[in-house]
Length: 395
Image (cartoon, rainbow, N blue to C red; front, side, top):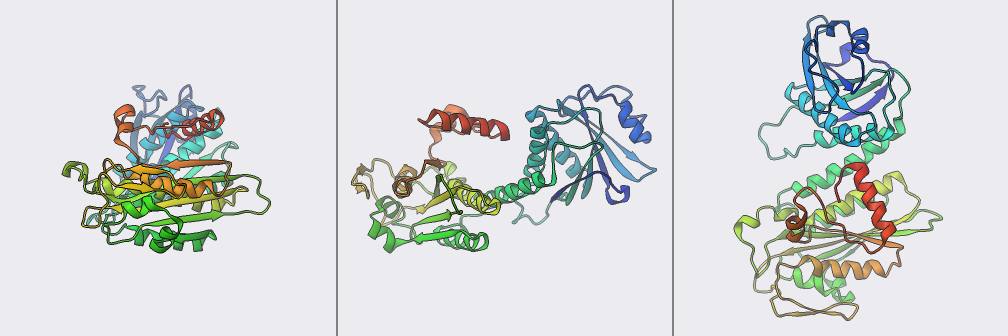
């Protein structure tokens, strides 16, 4: 899907017109722009609350009109609700090209418009690779502003880059486990690194043994695919700060010899979400050419039972000479992440941020719509919490 911004439009190019109605916006302004809508909203159903909607078909112009409640012009949650409602209505009405027409008075905040664009993309996403009958997709949305807007074309370019990589990460997470394993992810990471001019280091069985990365070696011992540690690097000129990102990449987690129950195993293909996020972030950093050095490490392994599997009671010695006793082989994430964190710390970064689907205890504590943040640096913690609030990713 493509989202563009223009100051004018051609009616024949769009099969639907979406008109956001903000709280306090007089509908007279809507009727002045679109006289055929005067008969709409006589019963005052649309008062501007986020999520409200009313539709009509114009026989004169042969297109669909959608009045959608947009809430407050500076409310980020309202922007996300508006995006969700718009995409739901467009999909239900099988619209391929839509116009979103902002009618004054009032100026909509930059944060509102950025969140609207982000969530239009997010709600557009579908993983339908294995569906026989695919849903009708929206191809193009044009944003039209009667007056100068806080959103510019560069903002749209940045949002498109970010959301393209979000979709890539989602595709990898949703892909079937028969196609996602350490071997295939090494290939995908290598191809992305070449395309986006990132440096990449691939460490497999022999290199891991030489480096003493024994957590990865233990967890991946019984898989048909050897484990891997991938390091992507973005190194701009004259950088002053270094950020290291570490992602968990268990491509399938059976639990090992401490086998998971069958009902808990069907979603374990997504235990590599941290590594998928690292790839998306590193591609975004490269495309935006950020002026900081960023290192992304993905620890990849498949946790399987078998005659070579590591066992409860085993003791692993790490590269930093720390030793760990295995009590349960289904606690494999922290074992591979320890290797990656050791390697990340050797790069002397200013900060390390680790992403992982690490433990069901987080879901027990926080539910399934919020991620847990553990951080001893108050400034970094505050920054991450603020970033999460700005984009609607709850921490």
